[in-house]
Amino acid sequence: MTIQRRLATVAVGALFASAGASALASGFQIQEQGASGLGVAYSGQAAAVHDASTVFWNPAGMSLLPGKQGVAALHYIIPDTKFNDSGSLLTPFGFGNGGNGGESALVPALYGTWMINPQWSVGLAVNAPFGLATEWDQPWVGHLHAIRSEIKTLNINPTVSFKVNNMLSLGAGLSYQRLEAELTNAVNAAGTNIGKVDGDDWAWGWNIGALITVTPATRIGLTYRSSIKYTVEGDLTFNNPALAALQSSVESDVKLPQVFGISVSHQFTPQTRVLADWTWTGWDSIQSLDIRRTSGPLAGQLAAQTSLNFDNSWRAGVGVEHQLNQPWLLRAGVAYDTTPVQDAFRTPRLPDESRWWLSVGARYMPTPTSNWWLDFGYTHIFVRDASSNLPPPGAPATEVARGALRGTYEASVDILAAQVGFRF
Image 1 (cartoon, rainbow, N blue to C red):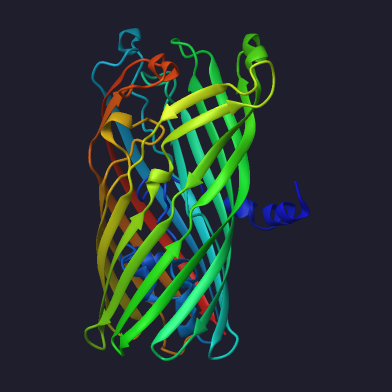
Image 2: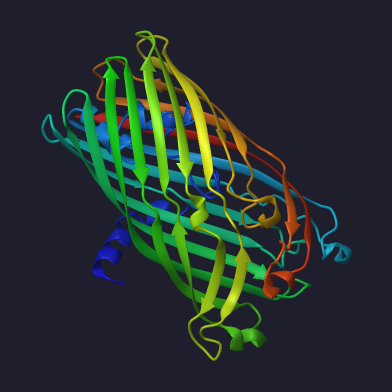
């Protein structure tokens, strides 16, 4: 490990020990990046500029935050994911449906901004833009396909903004991002032999944004985050010593998607603001999960292959904020998020479907000039029932060998979030 990677890991790695949340936006994207945005279902975040979390949503928004500001947020994510079997290969063995495959998680985020002068601002985001955690009770009818799946990211994102004039601000940033993965599944029908793959990698990405003040009441935000390419390196191990000869080092290429969004903020009255957005995510960068052996007599061969065939996805949301009185700002929002997962390729590692968000939240700020405030948010996500039809058409022999997994997933998610903001 290089000195740069060691320092990054020591500085913030412990903070994100539990940041592998169940997938809450499309695919395994984590939308939960601040309690102030949760209250409006993260609608219009590239134009909202609620607080220092704009470092992640749109760095151009830092031009509207005077002095030095910071945010520390914590989300508690409670997913409920069940599988209903309808004729899987292992059904005659009497294995169960796996219980609740969702795994609750705490997801933190930290942001800071500093306006150096009226034109230039800098900021830093430390958060987790992607994550996934599912674990099925063992043994279950799908254990040849998946038992535990966890993906964690740690994103360190310094940014800069420049105010061109009173109408236009521009922003940009770099992301140094770590991806860590752990995947397990049974390798025999009885479920007694378990194979585990774990690995990690660091990689670079970038983001840009623009904030356009059309009128004193209306802003438009544009933002783009690049794809990030990883070569995840790790090990394949087995719990049965008799399979030790099959253990080896492995690697897998992963390209996380690019993301583009457009947002609008409009102040209808001095007390009421409406936020809206449309976001596109390029999930077609992930078509399969291929795990290659890099050591031993089978070096160069595939240890495992899973067809994913992700489609691109989109998300649309609208939210409203109302200043009830000086201490209390109330929020509500709704959003619809489409899935990149095709029915024929849905795996128990990511039993994803399109979903609706319903959100409420509030901000408590004692006075307009207070140097601290609190934000709270709650969301319930209604996930469409999702079919399981494995193996998919044209699957490689290794997937066919895992047998049929037929049934339906039912899921929902509750999210609670709180954060403290401050300025000086």
